[in-house]
Amino acid sequence: MSTIDIIAAAPLFCMTFGILALLVLDLFRIDALPFPRLWWGVGICGATAFLFWPFLSMNETAFSGMMAVDTFTFAFALMILGGSAVTFMLSDELLEGQRVEPSADLDLLVLFSALGGIMMVAATHMMLLFVGFELLSICVYVLTGSARNQRASSEGALKYFILGAFSSAFLLYGMALVYGATGSMYYSGIAAHIGEPSMMLLIGIGLMIFGFGFKVSLVPFHFWTPDVYQGAPTSMSGFMAVVVKAAAFGAFFRLMASGFGSVSASWSAMVAVLAVLSMTIGNVIALRQTSVKRMLAYSSIAHAGYAMVGFLALGEGGGAAVVFYMLVYSLMTLAAFGVVLVVSSGTEAQYDQDSIESLQGLGWTHPLLGIAMTVAMLSLAGVPPLGGFIGKFYLFSAAVRAGYTSIAVVAALNSVISLYYYLRVVVVMYFSGERQLSWEPPRVLVFGPRLALILLTTGTLYMGIFSSRYYETAQIAVRSLMQL
Image (cartoon, rainbow, N blue to C red; front, top):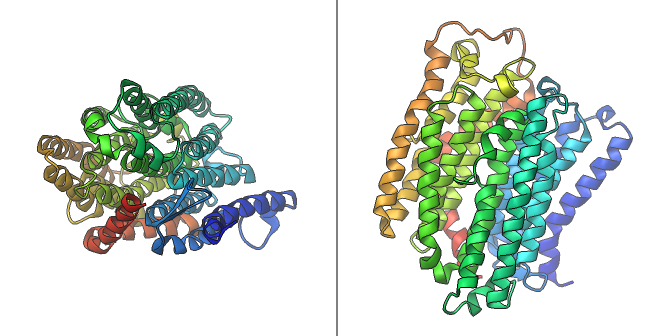
């Protein structure tokens, strides 16, 4: 094993060792150890993230060219690990309130999902991509149904599994057609042997887009999203909305830019249609939602459409805009789901009864939660100077420079439409009278969720005000991918 292989394998070995250690500790009553059980997951994510730092200054491949060691992998790996760590923090002492039995099994599934996501992002070979895709997917199916006594959770898991199996089949069949057309499963080999795109290649690319479209909730592959997000425990809904989506977008972008970038004219029309449909249908249906989790689910569909705009401008700053936007999206979406989790835990306002009206008066009775939710909603809506506005500005600007002005106009109009349902949440929290759902004032917000919400809210504000340095890092990440 060469030095570059050791550097590439170190974070993955660290996470795998941590998972095995957690499993062994569970045999000896991990809850009796000095640190709370969920904080072991945070520590594993932190240790793994630390080992990714060499990736920041490298631009090579490892394991015979199957895995990329570059800044792009570094950026998305930190998003995945950070989102996983925040999931653990938000779940601190709140799992039972979600009617989920606390167990190391859930921690292991979250960590295995993160491991699969990192493999997807780093993959430069289609088989490694598929292994990571399946590892991520299977673990998330189980996490969705982890509230075993809740019918909505079981239904969501079943729907997710059945539709996910179809998406995996589409992806695998697409890979087979691409291999048949190019004779290579390496992204670089595919790019080198594409030549004049054949019908077999175009169908293969289309099927692979379908497979990824399911994972990132693009219309018309979105039907599972509202039911799964509503039925899953809230902490797991946030995990799916952020970590799963970040991993899928990272892997999707690397594949399209490195493997199929030279024939972007052949697939850009499909991507443009999917982006417009996702933005429009996601926002329009979100207007009619009374469930806060379903509203956030349709919101995530719309934001997937926004992110897809960056795929239309691979050489015009679109890639950097996608990386930056996924970071900002992760912060503001986790903050929104975190507030919903804290408010609904231990009450009837979860699963199929999570009404937006349950947030009445929250801004006055619990100022920290009110501020966190307000910042998240305004940032998701794209209100300046928050991170969401800056992220959309970078995306839409890249689309205009690449000649997709009409797509940018549609995206901007959709952002205006989204103001209605995001501001409705703020109005309910501050201007709708007394809060009706019982969450007694004497109850103290435990340390983990409190810290997570403070970090997420501060990060959303910071990314809007000091965006340039992070956008420059995103540019470096995409440049490293293009030069690999």
